[in-house]
Length: 126
Image (cartoon, rainbow, N blue to C red):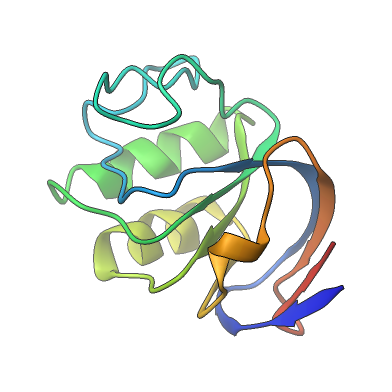
């Protein structure tokens, strides 16, 4: 299956998918190693390391952009898929060079699957 979305930050990556059905805050939601530490998250205890992270949209402080940038520069977060991207997530992804597509129905995505995120063409290949 191929899903078509809107390109926010260009790039191409193939990796394992981690899906959260809840909005996500990078500030206080994830530690420096990429572990989800927000106890209210539906993916608490999971790791973003080496994964494409799908979630509806970001929430929280603008410092979240820097957290995303830091995760990218340390090679932890490989890609982002959103239902609707907002400026905090977009800024972090663009600065960090993380491929990011939005306008994707994340209910069609499943954690643990290996996918292709083609953020040149706006495609998610399952």
